[in-house]
Amino acid sequence: MSSEKVMSESSNASTKEGQLPRSSGVSWSLIMGAAFLMATSAVGPGFLTQTTVFTNTLGASFAFVILVSIILDIGAQLNIGV
Image (cartoon, rainbow, N blue to C red; front, side, top):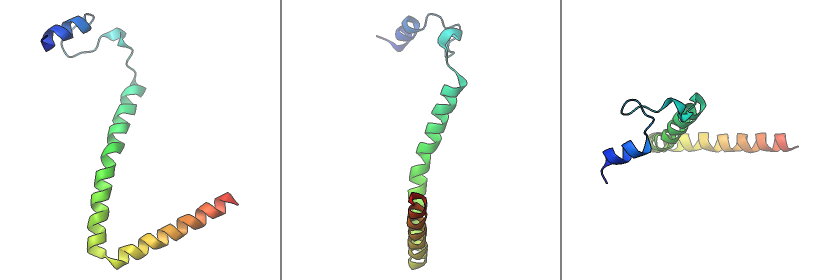
């Protein structure tokens, strides 16, 4: 089955090719949610790459900053739990 035939069978209400029919019910919140999900998914690889570069470049200095950050985090968690 060709893709043109599938498109014509599945969306008879569409007025122009590539446009959603007006009765589809697609809302801005759905579109913004999808955009937010795509944007946050792209953050992970960049964060890991930058962390690797900084660790390689700064070495022990960066490790010390990470250690201080972990200690501060544990302190905040214990303070909130009390």
